[in-house]
Image 1: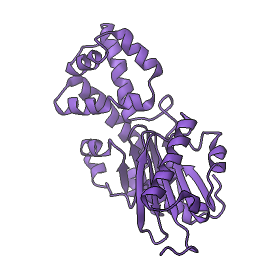
Image 2 (image 1 turned 180 degrees about the vertical axis):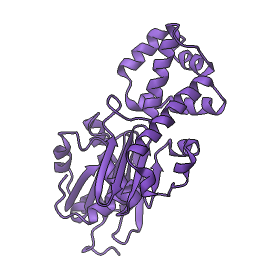
Image 3 (image 1 turned 30 degrees about the vertical axis):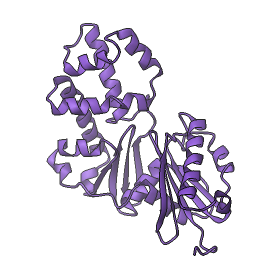
Length: 294
């Protein structure tokens, strides 16, 4: 029987591709975990809010608990775009919980991966960001969206591939099987690729990442060029953040496992498993926050 004086904890990991909601008690026992769609509050607030609310409802249902019993519970949301969206307050107001904590997915990633230890976190999935924590000093690179950053990410790789395909069409660069296969997805018509690019979201761009990885593993020269350029940029960022000095490098996200063996040995020597994930990070932040301020 759940102690009514010990509220449940809802942890929300709202990323650019998916939203994961976990319901647990304060001992850490997980009661349910569900997944819905994108929850980037900066790129599409209404979709993000809908997916967050749907995830919360599903998590309670899966745990066999009515959502109208949630008023005494506490919730923490780590949301992509939270630091740049001016509508986070709207989401907070729509959540009927005893305590609501909202922070960026960056903060929760860092807390989950490192706790209070020094180190660097490279989160590389649909988008990307890089965080350093050294002697209590926090430093950030990226996480500003595809137009301004997202280096090495799936979206950045996809964007680079589309740009390369356009250059091949113009006769500036040599083709490859990857290029041909990519253009074939648009009926080999550059106009259709251009139209796609004009409305493509970061998630749409990142759909090409798996093609690039597969082509790289087959030795495709264009894929190798794109990946090598991305790895070089990754090393540049890690050098800026003094990752080797910390001796602790955590990599997560959908492309982390692909990049790791491609890194210089000096970085492979300091790879460390994250202590936890974003859900663990936001749970820790929530349990240690009393104000709920962003």
